[in-house]
Length: 229
Image (cartoon, rainbow, N blue to C red; front, side):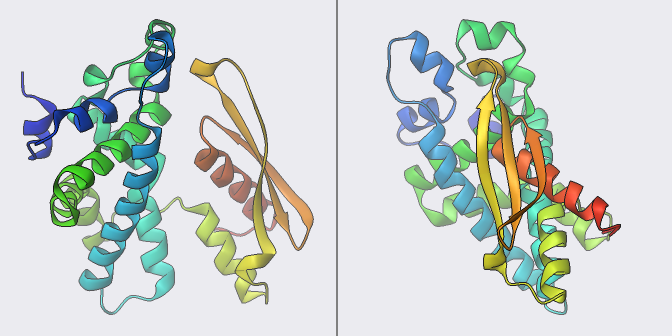
């Protein structure tokens, strides 16, 4: 069986970084504390955005900001990252708490997508930007090829809504996604987000992650406006 390092094409100098990237908060809690991957997820998310954005900017010189934004969002969204994690069989390598493991955590899209981001963050911390870039471009290779061939399914409702509203005269600062709480046990949380436009609530979305909840709220708003992306 191939190791996760073989699959992503990178060997860690500090293997503690790899272990942290694969450690879910539920495991750390059950062990009485310790580090887990949420901070690395934050860093990996930023690296993923930057590297994907740079690649698309250079590869599609004739495309405008709207295309670039939507394509990048589709490459870094939870759905696509979940598909990347499945290809890596990443769930097999995760350190999960017993409760999370028993309730299907190894197949949960939000956990797996977050772990991909954490893995990218760990590579950056261990090997720097160029190492992270090499790994990210390999992980995104199938999606990038689909983009080249015009086959990438764009489901970035947030960007589509923002473009529509800006065409109507709104500014980005007029559009806000406000956390409205969460429910459910730690292993199966549901997040709620309110979409506010010019201080008024336009829609409310729910999802297994805040990102998903925001997309669902934006999709609702677009549907109400009878706007198809």
